[in-house]
Image 1 (cartoon, helix red, strand yellow):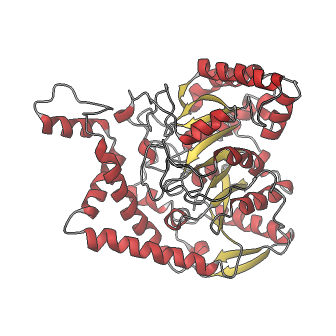
Image 2 (cartoon, rainbow, N blue to C red):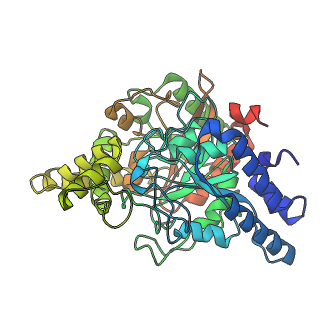
Length: 492
């Protein structure tokens, strides 16, 4: 079969279980596509063919023996922020270019236990800091819809591999929009779960109170399959919540769109910089949901102007703390011929970190310093609580809240956005992480340059099933999620 990469996760599962093709054949199919296409997209940092084929053979044996899981034998790509035993785990940084992880992240462990096949590790903004995947030590990943544009970030590699049909689905992490924004830029479905729903153990930390792993795929149904694998309590993660996990696939039709109250924050649709064609596609998608029976309700979210400054105090402060461990002594990059210990520290960190990471470490260290801790960091945490309360008040009257995922579509590679411009591009996504809420991106059409536009739906705590169900039903009535990127069409 030549079109295996066009099949949904459900179709791949059924094909494997029914013996229409083997996991080895499927895995080889993807490895050949990676070899043929990825030099143009530059989505993979490390491809693991030997590991993938050995896992595929094990899945085939399990399927033959009749004791395989539903997803056994299906290939998967991991963002290169998930520690993977015996495989380089770089977080897109020179600092960890030589780091071979001695253990698996819990998400990787669960994927292996489900019989999923690891194709490799994919590119990302360095230490997940960025919105374009251009800050990676390994160079920029390109958007499969147009190779002159970025795929978004920081999970740009995860979005690009799925959009280019180089993996059926992928793991990502979202600290301030890093699943939803690249999913929007690449025409995919991407879910940021409630904080604590998916284990953070073995994820290289950026901002520990904000980071959350989630699935990226073509459809809500495909995301639901991966959520069934990765969600759940983990005793190794102190922030993991011991709460019963839904069967996300079984619940795909559990929420009726008819009568669903969707909150429309008027402040979100008056943000400076919201592109007219993005606004139009989002409003068209809301009209479609209304035609399906949803009720649109105007809500007030009054803290919008505080989102960006609050996030860009808390996230860099936590990054400053987390990245202090990279000192050139224990593991990672070490400068050559240091004259003394202080020189070792200074040069290892100066040479090992990129510009964006250094910028955030400096901001965070300043915010945490003795004279400014109360004035900046403590105040930002207080404002964070007000942002959370703002959402909870809105959820008293609505089931979900709708917004664009990003104010624009993908940027051109090398657009040289100022840090401020880049940070403002996250205005619709940051607050979800600050409040710890779940949110999902759904593709809703193309802009005037044929680049994808995304609708974001924000839910109350633990409403992942509801979000997936709403988007699934929307996708049963539209075909935006089935549209293929240019490079995928050229290499169909």
